[in-house]
Length: 197
Image (cartoon, rainbow, N blue to C red; front, side, top):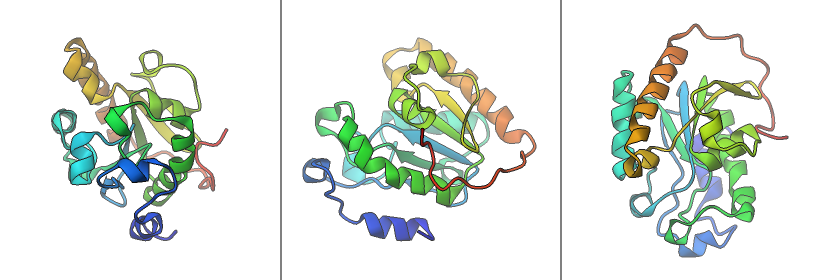
């Protein structure tokens, strides 16, 4: 693919897995096509499914606050998910759904070519870093996935249910701000396949 719009057209009204039959709206992703910062979440929730945009509910408002704390607006970043369609009842993504949908995420990452990828929560972190370690053990430290710098962070929704995680999120976003302000590293040649083991 040569552009995000071409990729979105290729995906179309996807029915490559059963989620295409139960979703309201496919949630492709949103933001700058040349963003330095890309967020990868788990899957659309109810609000996202209705609007067709990631992170538009309460977790999205918190994400906007966290971005503002480091001087950014969501229009300056790119936001996508592991899955493009909402799992029924907001259940966890299933392995076959992840396998079907993540080639599109890999292509989004290739096209955007961000400086930093922030993985939000367990599913995004485990996929991008090819690890079975949970988010609690990985958050707050920098990792590599191919040529990309990866910062795992709790999903903002976690702070809606556990207020103690809000301070942790603020600290992780402060680190993110420092990483983004650092001089660019020398890029390695672009990987054809991202996040492959």
